[in-house]
Structures are given as C-alpha cells and as structure tokens.
Length: 202
Image (cartoon, rainbow, N blue to C red; front, side, top):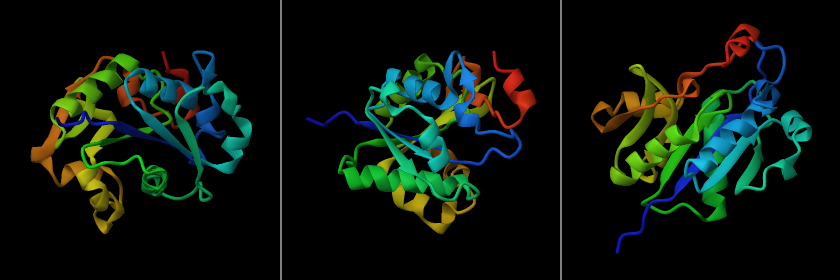
C-alpha cells in the first residue's frame, strides 16, 4: 500500500526588509506576528512539518513557546542573500531531520503571505496528494502566488544552478508539470514589501 505523501513546509523569513524599514515577519497581522500567522495557516492546512528560516535578530524577537507546533527554526546569517538561499537551508534542515521520503512534497511560502487561509493551503495540499508528480501553485484571479509545492524528486534541481536566480525557475522550466489551484484568500498573492503594502492588508 502506497503511503500518503507528507508535506514538509519551508517559510522564508530571513530578509532584512529594507523597503519596509522594519522586520516584516514581526509586523502584527490579526493580533500576531505575520510569520506566525503564515505558519499557523500551513499547519492548519495540513502541512506536517515546518522549517522557518529566519535571521538571528528575528529569532531573538520571537517567543518560540507561542508555537506549540511541529516547527523548527533555522538561522540564515545572511539577511541580504537571495530567497533561494533560505529555501536551500530549509531543505537541508528537513533532510538532516531524516523526514524526507521520495513520495513527499516540499511546500515553500514566504512570511509575507499575510492573510493566507488554511483552507487555501489545504486545497494545494490535497491537489499535491492527488497528483504527487506535479508542481502545485496557488493562484488567485489567474495570478500565480503562494504556497508552491514541488515533489521531492526535484530537490536536486532546486539545489542546482537552475534555480540560482530563484525558485520560480523550477516551474518556468517545467510548464507541463505545473498545476494551478484557484484560491480565495488575498494572502496567496500578497507581497508585503512597503508600509503602503502593509496598510492594504485586509
């Protein structure tokens, strides 16, 4: 009997947030830090394990006991580095934990997916479970967003030069493998980079 895939999440939250002027991962959304809201949506939406890749400064500002969840924090000491570096650190943490198996999926979501609904995460998770060889991407009004789930078989591609300029190249180079999942929450396409973006969060 084939085992149902586990979904292993990576939340990227290590950036310096220069345009915001403060760490956006810590900005309150719905009464809790933005990154905590995203992690909660992933767990409630069916993600089995979550690695949050953060800077040391954000780690010190977060109260970890607020997350009684299967959550692991990993430090990225280069907050000015590209997002793909954080994705790779998250992958390394999952692999080091010994939880990655060939039928599983890797879910990636940035910490600024403010307002992401657990129901939309679950739609993406269920789609991957049905079609475990596909790259699942949340979409809203035809626009690609987050989360993105890719099969474990593509981990080496993510580590390679193919994705050196960003994870989006994974799907761009495999259009026939991409499955877009219509979602309803604004958080699926949120991009909170400036104070103006933050003010527009519902």
